[in-house]
Image (cartoon, rainbow, N blue to C red; front, side):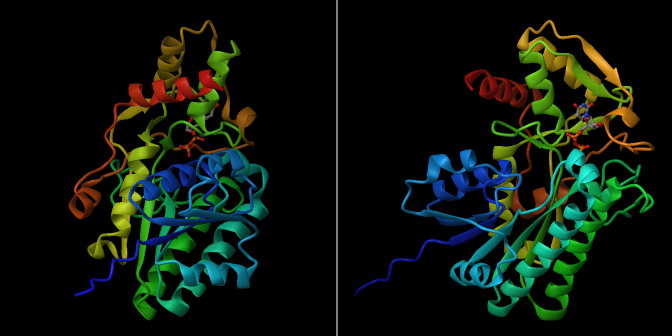
Length: 328
Ligand code: UDP
């Protein structure tokens, strides 16, 4: 008897030319999936999709996601949509508040509406920023979100992503659309640019070029950095886990490092002579800028659902970023 071969999963990645998108493409192709990307290259780069251009399982379109008929066709072809397109990076958010809100809310609304027409699964990339000023560390998914005032533009990012989460969960509850919300914590690795203010690539570039390593505030604020390869592994595992549907899930590492500690680590591993320079927040961002002193995920839900969580040693990740910049 003729047995039909199972069709490979077809994934659509919005914002697939971004840093995380590029790594997700690689991972999904390695699983034998077909991958289609839409990206307007506003913050993404063609460099991130260059390695896959010749793969018959890969295709991409440079376009604005708000070109609805085009996106509708792409969503129709997909089994699962990874919605990564967003305005990212604190600097970008402070400098372009209108774009942040419009992109983050408008694009998510469009994706969910189109996915809902055909009942396609959507994995929404949210952010640990939504926990805001909550100081109950580690952050658990059911903790309160504590935002600052609307007069401070940094909070527009957290609020716009929180709206995305509400909307995704509303589609699940009211319309039965299978959605998963992944709250990504600080994600780092080769390919990330420091252009939008992200700390690790900025430090590595500064150290390698002999410029001062700029630590904002007093450097006692801490973060947990996870390797992008492990993060994309979690995203695809969440997409394949039926129990993850309708859930909000933290995706991050629990290894904590202070920003000053990170600066010292980068300086040591690059053997750089760069001085470490402290810069007040007002100078780095805007008057009255509020930073989070600590940000650490509780990853028990992630472990329960998919069986693992990012755990790569921070020094190893920093070394991989240094290698990436040295090779360029
Ligand atoms: N930061 C810094 N120097 C830089 C860029 C960022 O000290 O050149 C700090 C920033 O103020 C924050 C931390 O590093 O406390 C992480 O910043 P990033 O923008 O990478 O991510 P966030 O956790 O703020 O989303």
